Amino acid sequence: MERNKIDKSKMKKVILNSPNQIEEALKFTGNIKVKGDFKNIIVCGVGGSALPANILLTYLNLLSSDYPPIYIHRDYGLPRWGGKKSLIICVSYSGNTEETISAFKTALKRNLKIVGIASDGKIAELCKKNKIPLITVPSGIQPRSATGYIFTSLLKLLSNSKIVRDGLKEIKKTVKELKKIKAEKEGQKIAKRLVGKIPIIYASNQFKSLALAWKIKFNEN
Image 1 (cartoon, rainbow, N blue to C red):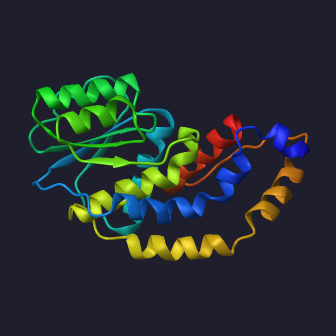
Image 2 (cartoon, rainbow, N blue to C red; image 1 turned 135 degrees about the horizontal axis):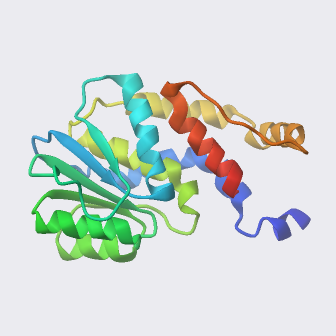
C-alpha cells in the first residue's frame, strides 16, 4: 500500500509491461506502409518521442548497413535538403509537440510523403484531415516510457514499406527472452547497490543510444 502512495504514476506497472509494448505495437501498426523511392528518412521529434529513433538506428546497424540514411530532426520546420525523395515521420507521443507540428506543416507545404505517430492531439488531427497514414499509440504514460511502442512502430512501418530489412523475427524472439527475466527482482538488486551512490552509465559507441536511454530514465524516474 505504501508503495502505491509513492508510485502515483504507476511506473512500476509500466516498466514491467515493457516487453508487451513490442507485441502491442506490432498489432496496432498492422500493415501501415508507404510507397516511394526514398533516398533518406527524416524522423521528427523531441525528448522521449525522438529517443526510440536513436535506438532504431542502433538496431538497424546490427541488422544491415543497406538502408537509406535516417536523420533525427529535433527542431522546428525541416532541413533545407528535405525534398521529394524524403520520407517524413513525425513522432509526438502526445501529438501536441510544437516542434513536431511545425515539421509536419512544413512537410505538408512541400507536398512530401508523411507518416504520423501519436496517441492523439494535433498530429492525429492533421493526419486525419489530410488523409495521411497515422500510427496511433496507446496514451496514458510518460513519453519516455513509450519507447517500446514507438521503436517497434518505426521498425514495422519501415519493414512493411520494404525500406529496411525485416528484423521483426529477432524482435519477437527478444520479447520471449525478456519475459523470462524476473525484472522486479533484478531491479531491486540494482537499486540496493545504488543506495548512497551516483551511477555513471557508459557504453561503446555502438550502444551509446541505449546508455543514453538508461541515463535519462535514471534521472527522470
